[in-house]
Length: 165
Image 1: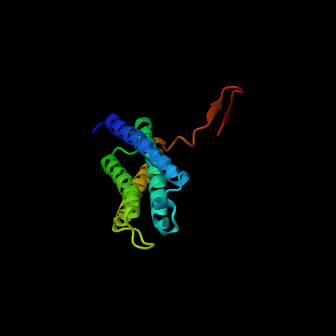
Image 2: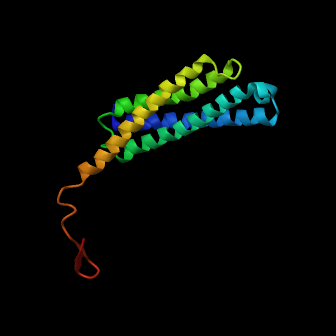
Image 3: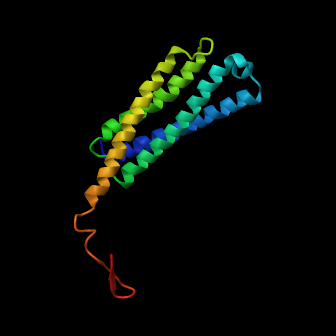
């Protein structure tokens, strides 16, 4: 897949998921504002927490997709080698993390979230893989650009005609 396709995919995914998760936030605020018992009762504290976590993680991951899409466009060499793994890891994290939180709040047992919350650690590992690969590539991209002699040669200061380091 070409650089443009990855950039387009993640920009599209990021903006649409940001719309979805901000709408979810509006729904949660409405449930709170209208004092809906299924959301606000003390016995439903687990649901409220899980759904709030789904909203927060989904919104944050949406922004990560937008940033990744922009990085692919601005610095395509930064993550070219591992781009398919990074891409799928980010998408997996964006589905599993908020999805696990949300579904864990749909059906819960006492104070414990439902079994779907087991998707959350898988999504977290997926996110850590993507972030690790991006961080490693960002570090190596800066080193590849700098030439060995770049730091030793004095530059001319054109305003005074003197050289400086």
